[in-house]
Image (cartoon, rainbow, N blue to C red; front, side, top):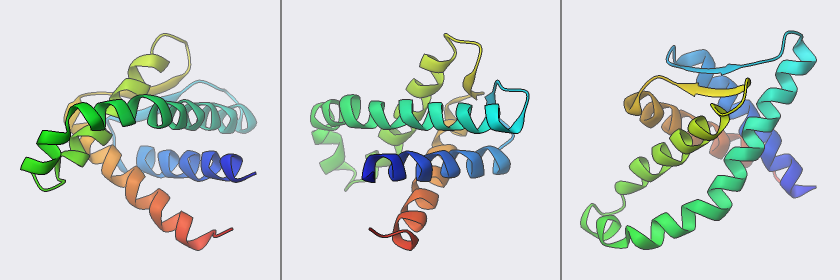
Length: 123
């Protein structure tokens, strides 16, 4: 139940980021129910990437985390979002990102939005 709630929170955060940024969009699904499923699928892929790939990247880039006093987190989050975009480009639906700076701003928006929603929706 907690995992499903986290996926829903990430889907809403991704939806908010697509509303704010013009270079970030989720494609696929003609009807509203299909669009919601696409957002949930993108959020699920985002969660899997963050659970599997992100810890490895954080470990490998530990010196950069120390050197930048943790600011490298923004770059790693953008890279994870960009990886989700690349993975979903292999299909007809999913996340499309124009460039790396869009991924940086999108990752910031998604991080802040999911943090706020996680505070509001406590278990």
